[in-house]
Image (cartoon, rainbow, N blue to C red):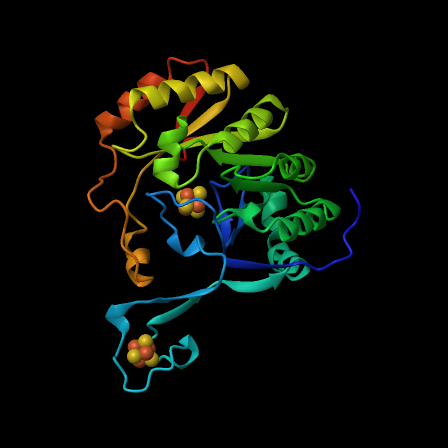
Length: 283
Ligand code: SF4
Ligand code: SF4
């Protein structure tokens, strides 16, 4: 891997410090903008567009007569700009302030989104810089990317987290807007490698919680990495307000989080396979 001499720019929308569920130890998680998927349950619609955008909280709006539409001049604090441009070098400097926490906990940096691989040059350069500084790196990805990019990342990323949302191609297309061939190929490659990783499924009632999908998922993990960890993330509605602020309709208005019984049923099915199934946060 050649050393970087460029200074790629990327668009991020949030940095979460002291994150405990985005990889080993205490992590600094950087959220990148842009995602090619459109999952019906997505709780971060502000991450989907690759461009900066404005969100507006109507309840704070004072309906001024002269509205510039700029957060800087909004007296009610109703407007928020989501997304800012940053260079890989500047981002590294920003996150490295957390090095003492990483060292004590065995943590590091996690790239999330959105889909971090939507900005491949920026991500590669940032990860290379992390390598040079001996920072532990993790990525949360849909794995919707070219095989060559995944192979490059396997040298640059210490820990992968990825969701397998639906195993059937048509169902995946219906639920996320894209078919899953590339995702399953990449997932199989990763699972068969020696990389540290965590597979997850967002469990969304009426969308992907049917027995056939759960059994296909269990069998896929058994085939490619017996003993693999699988985390179940129960669907939640915390993103609803964000859709309103962006002036967009929530795609699943009537869907409720899984009940205790629905969670137990899914766990029971998946635990029939030789994999290690855990509840969200239970690792
Ligand atoms: S400036 Fe802010 S508070 Fe005033 S109308 Fe515009 S969004 Fe509303
Ligand atoms: S992959 Fe993640 S960020 Fe992209 S639409 Fe789906 S839930 Fe949202």
